Image (tube, rainbow, N blue to C red; front, side, top):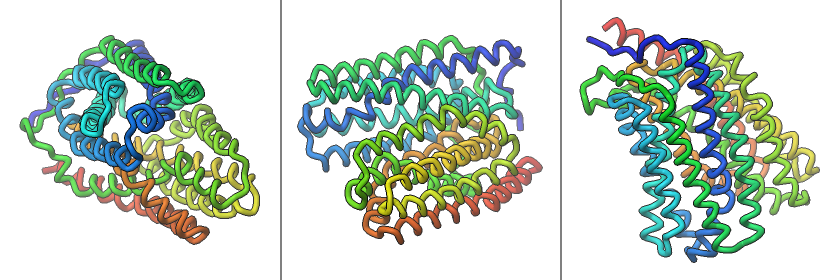
Length: 405
């Protein structure tokens, strides 16, 4: 079997420049995304006039369609080159975001959310393939951590702008946010064009999505998806828990998000530098599950004093950083170099699953179960973290057999 190489050897200076350009592109669109995440629901409800149920259906459908499209778009990045696909999907995302300012009924809203979900999910897969082509394997996790820290910085800045729009609470303010988000993705597309054009790397026949038959990798992706259910905790579950089960002041919610964002900015790169092999990655995910168990146990104590919320948030973000570092190394390390796009697209479906199902599932479990619900959630995280080590071993054995064959 003949396999094309990623590209000609890239000088160290160009590698460093490539990482900087990736980080700049990440920051450009994450500022607008931060504003969008904070204010979009209010816009859809107040300006467009959609009831909450329709907003929920539309957003869920968008991420569901995006989840299905991620693998084929990642495969397209392998076959056609990741830079061009990433640029096209960044422009498509800009078009989708700008279109939100024009919708005035449910059906157009549903169509635009589907376009948005497809473009965002595919862009993420193409970016991972681009990073894999630009950065040597031993440095990918550290580079991914730098991008994650940049993402969090941009989201924090954008959230501040979104807060201003909420304070103004006018259609013009919300429309300006959509324009800002669309402009950010166009800037990101222009920045990505400055990167070297990598040659297509997939040696698989056109249309062959081998990741869909890779059962060990599917299991690893499923375990990661279970752990990613931590994502709606600080944005949805803990605020509802604070309102209904504690006497904590409302500003504590902002403090918890500040703890999360600040910690990722300060420590994510340091945590990721300690993860260089699949063995270390598996151990990092296992520790992440235990840290999340501890966080859930502390959150369960918060009715006895709101400082427990701060401690729980600190434990949760530490688990988040351990999980991220381990998952990045695993997702890259277990994927064939000539199919990074489709494999990263498949691994990224875990995020879409957590976004779709997490709020509903955790609201029922935690708010309905109280202390026992928190402990059950923590036990789920710990079990998933422990399961990652044998799953990665199975995937490595399977990959070795495939290479020998």
